[in-house]
Image 1 (tube, rainbow, N blue to C red):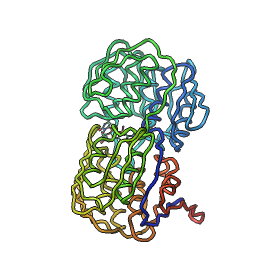
Image 2: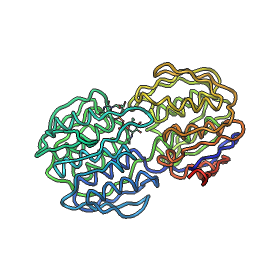
Image 3: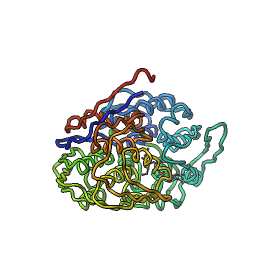
Length: 421
Ligand code: UD1
């Protein structure tokens, strides 16, 4: 059992460099399956999801070598089709092998990932889109079993711009016969990143970055090199850390245009945000003001920064509404924040947060990656010591989080409690 022990009170100041995006690297690793030969990736984050995804690819016949930030994936002419429960349950994002497997192997048997701490996460849109392309689905013994003798382009509209469904459908459509149109597609920067990689592999995709993607299937793709897009959620986490601790943090290797709304909200809260050569800088001299947040698909405010928005408002001057529209269970971590003395009341997917001058350190538990990071930020502005348990969640999304925060002046250590193992 590992915990982060945070002693509150430090003003964070200095510089950090963000790594490649967790939510992109898994997809571009899966996309490598679409071409025989060696794909090389750079700016791969050193997080546990990457070796787990590597295991999934190895089971499918690929060879994965190297280590973050440089990884090479060599894919044979014939690939396997089974993604086992042991791995899929650990990283839900691994369902993104479904599209590539259908396109390359004509069949797929992928474990159903099950729910997680942010609520149930359906796959109906993935299935609907792939069925439109000609796949048939069955569900047996905890596996989604799909077959497609041939994939053919089709027109479809998603009920909701699901990131995962858009990616799976896209990765099948690039090798389908004829043209596919996906309306109401997701347009997160990670989708754009995947499109750019697919185009470099020879795919024909129009409308990149818009909600209508038009894909003209090609016979085959070739391997390429891809530099993973910087992680906007990690960059955003440090931006919130600067605002909450009345600090001054330069975030390097980040793309401020991917965080436009989030940075604008921090300006409303009283922070000064400046674009720099390779990222941005956030400084906040006074106690932040309360700001309302509403999560929405990109370019709306990201659900993955919603816990940080609640944590900021918990110590802000005033009261704010935070509305969560993407995941039903995303307020679960609020019970942990209440242990630090926060004043938050929820009603369905709305939360009202009344800011307190200071929070009060206590033992809390990370319920998921982003909740864990938000609890660390709350600990930084709480009196005394906050110990955040179950930090394996945080390690999934943040490379060397403790070291980065220490470098900014935070008092934080990782403790391994052997008596609990
Ligand atoms: C991805 C990100 C996650 C982020 C989310 C929204 C990865 C590995 N994870 O998750 O960090 O919070 O995008 O930006 O990239 N839904 C359905 N049916 C489906 C698919 C989704 O109802 O077939 C629902 C989900 O239950 C959820 C909503 O749509 O309520 C959004 O899900 P989606 O955009 O698919 O998120 P993920 O790809 O799972």
